Each structure stands twice: as C-alpha cells, then as structure tokens.
Amino acid sequence: MYMKILPVVAGLILCISAANAGKGAPDFESYEWTLINEEARWAPRAGLQVVSLGNRFYLMGGRTPRPPGFPPIPGDSDIWGDVWTSNDKGASWQQLLETDDAQHWPARAYFQAVTKGRHIYVLGGQNFKLEQNNCPPFVTGCPPFVSSSDFFNDVWRSRDGVHWKQMTDAAPWEGRAGLSSVVHKNEIYIMGGSFNDDPAVIGGPPTRVYFNDVWKSRNGRDWVKLTDNAPWEPRAGAIVVEKNGYIYLLGGEDGFTCLPDSPRCPPYFNDVWRTRDGANWELVTTAADWAPRPGHQVVVLLNHFILFGGFGLSEDPTDPFKAANPMDIWVSKDGADWSQVSDSPWNAVTPEEIKYDFDALVVKGGKHGLRPSIFTFGGDRETFDFTDPANYLNVDNDVWRFSPPLWMTTPNRE
Image: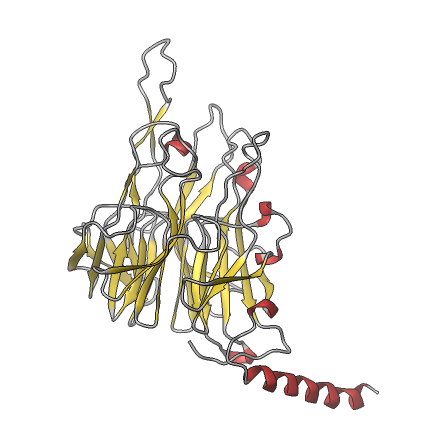
C-alpha cells in the first residue's frame, strides 16, 4: 500500500509546489521555524556577528554575562574575540581562533562584520570595563562604578577567518558600539552607534553619546565622511540593509530605559529612512506599523524586508521588569507599508522567549533542496532585573532557520 500511495503523494506535492512557484509574492505566513542546533559549541552570547563567505558561516565576538557576584557588578560579562565556522548551515561548528589569539582583533561585542569580495571585515564595537568610583563617605546617589570600556574604531579583514590584517588601527570616525554597516555599490558604509556605556546598565557616568554621521570606504583603510549630521536622529542599534539600489535604515534606540530627560518613552525608534549615496536621505515613514525597538534584525529575502525580534520594556507598573519583547514578524516590499505575518518567531509562546541582540543572515538556497531561508544565531533574553540571580542564563547559543515548509517552493530570486 505504501508504494502505491507514495507516487500519488509525490505528484500532489509537485502540483502544489508548481502552483506556488508561479505566484509572484512569497507566502511568508506559511514559513516555518526549524531548530538547527539547540546548543552550539560556542558559548551563549549576545552582540555577536555572523557572515557567510564561500558557502561557510563565520561566527565571531559577542558578550556572555557572568554569574552575579558579591558585590554585584552591573553588566559583568565575558567578551569574546573567538572565531567559529560551519560548513553545514549551522548544524556543526569548528573553532578557528580563540579570544586571546594575538594575531587578530581584540575581543569585542556590539560591533559589525560584513563581507566584500573575498574578505570578511570587522569594524568597531566595545569591550567591557568598569572602575571603582571614589565616592566620598556618606554621600548618597554616588554610583559605585564608572565606565572605562574601550570603544573601537579599528578595521580588520580576513579571507579565511584565521589570518587577519589590520587595515587601520584608528579610522577617522570615532570609536563606537551599536554602529550600523552595509556594503553598497562595492563600498563599506558605517553610520550611527554610540560611545560610553548606558547609565541604565552601569548606574552612573559618563554620559552616553550617540552618532548620526555616515562614512564609506572601498578598502576599510581610507574613509570618506559623507555627512556629519544625517536627518535621522542620532541612535545606536539601527539596522541597515541594501535593497534595489538604496540603503535602508530601520529602528534603533537612544537609551535603554525611560529616564527623566528621555524625549520618548521608551526611547526607541520605528522610523524608516533610505539613501542612494549615504549623504542624501529620504524619509520613508516616521512610524512603521511595528513597535519601536532596538536589538531587532531586518533582512531582505525574495525582495521583501523581513523584520523580527528586539527588546521591549514592560508597560506593567506593578512589574517593571516583566519581559515584554515583541512577538511578531513583519514583512514589507517598500519599507512604508508593513504586514504582520506571525506572532511567534522561534516558535515562541511568551515574550520571555523572544531574542534581542542576536544576528541573522539570508541564504538564497543550496544543496539538498534548501530554499531561500533566514538563519539566526544566539541572542539575549535578559531583563533589567539585576537582582534576579538566574537572569544571566537568559542568553542563547542556538541556531534556527526560517524557511518555506516542505510542500512549498518559492522563486529563488532577490
């Protein structure tokens, strides 16, 4: 009976697949999340970067929170400078470099990595350092620690993830974390980001500074400033992607929590801007349909923007640390009009399962019938409740794939 049914089922699948392949717009509502690796060999981390080069994934950097000590040190973390690779789309991983290897870039998180030609480029980011504050005796309101983190403006590149060349130890743009970067018209663009740690994390000075400048480089060594003051508000954590000859900038933040002087509460963005040259910007929408957020990702798949993940603040006055990360996936063709296609990225059933400060990339297709897909790596699920002794465990080292179901095919185009 099985052998008789199988050709019928196969024929039915082919008919359905052919019908779907002829449709102009991909059916993202039918896409499914598949857990590729629940616990990869690399440590759980946030603020990491992953790129694809030569049919391999390269994963590097990031931060892993440490268990709380006594007295507690806010934001205490291990900062990574390791490099890992996978040749089977995230199912298995091989370590190429350790953090303390002196032949490549210093450990960092919240940096950027892009590919251009045959090279991987690493740009900017920060480590984590705090110094004891010399508070006068019996003075209240004096924070016990002050930030002394390094914020990088160096640029490195590699063909294989093992051998790295420093293109510059000090680019003309100021050192920063949470910067945005994209390759556009065969040049590397960087923009935005911030300097100094946020007072919501460390509890004190120095003041965090945000950028809205834009720079470009053909080789990572020589940089041209395109504008010192783009029309979008200074911010960190914005996502930039290239689509149809434009660079698009989406979302971000200029603060983590609602402080007395915050112009917005929460201090997050959901505007969308675009440019052809990095100097002249056009507002696409002041407020997209998705909630303002940092820590999210946006990728371009089948000529559509796909936006998901990110951090959200609790709106419950009785529980200010309640997880409130946005449970949604949004799709747009033009960046102005958005449609929600799911409320369960990563098959999540509660906001506690939604990640932020993860990384994502698109694979257009591949061997063994792999269709155009999105892969995600690691990420953060911590809240700002620093009294929670288990909070540091809410950081991941998993790999997921968001792709069409087996019965569906999609046009393999970008």
